[in-house]
Image (tube, rainbow, N blue to C red; front, top):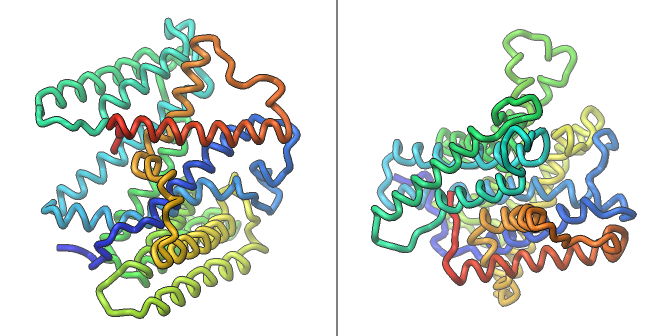
Length: 397
């Protein structure tokens, strides 16, 4: 059973989009520590009613997750997974994202190294060892060895969670879920919606509107005190993030759903109509809800999804239609190994801090020199990911 008949070809433009997003993410994370750079190179303040390209990086992650969901679910079912096996696989992926998100958030602040009996740098590096042991793709037929290594990883993560102490001696807690955790919740809701509507584009578009409605209900004075709508307060952020993932899912289906014979020109036309609808919806909602990444508003999500659509439409035309694709080889290792690429910068930060090495001299902490350093660091991380892929170090949730 499959929900849709999708293109069987490898979509290079999706891989390229994923790789580019990871590169930009590493760049802007490093750029965040640079002084004296233009406002458009930073996150906009919460109440500015504006967004920069930096504010669109996280939405691009969510958008690409959505683009990949139909292919991932269909591939699992094509391989013979039952519906229940598929749900179990989805739940394990979500659990992994939540665990990773919570651990990473707790390395940022609020820890008590004295009570832990070790530095946060060592604790974090041991955490990454556990991550690699649990989620590494093992290229061996020795299943016993694989189970042993994964078990060691699980035990190590559990021990680290027990060792961790907050400022007042409390155990590790989800103050918030972190970027990976937020992706996990959006992934969960999007997978449920995709299956409930059996991949129907109109049904998924309706759920994008419902997601907007959840946010509106929780932020409208005349609605937010209604008892049966109280649940919207806790879920408004997840609803907006899910709308971004669903937007990527819709664009993917418009281009790659092969249930009917549709001319390529009509697929592009449908994609442009969907893109325009996102921008129009954002325009009409903007007077009531400012553009704000910090507040995760509908306008921010709709405009971000619209920009993602434009970028992908161009990449698809350039790479998969015009076959101008050689340049994408640089992004392939990161696109195929996103989790490892995502944690490489943190591994570098914690390792250099543990060793007392500074990779960030004061002369590179401002202006153009800092921006150039950030770009160099991002490219270097991509190079490391390429080398690790060559030695078959790959992580998969």
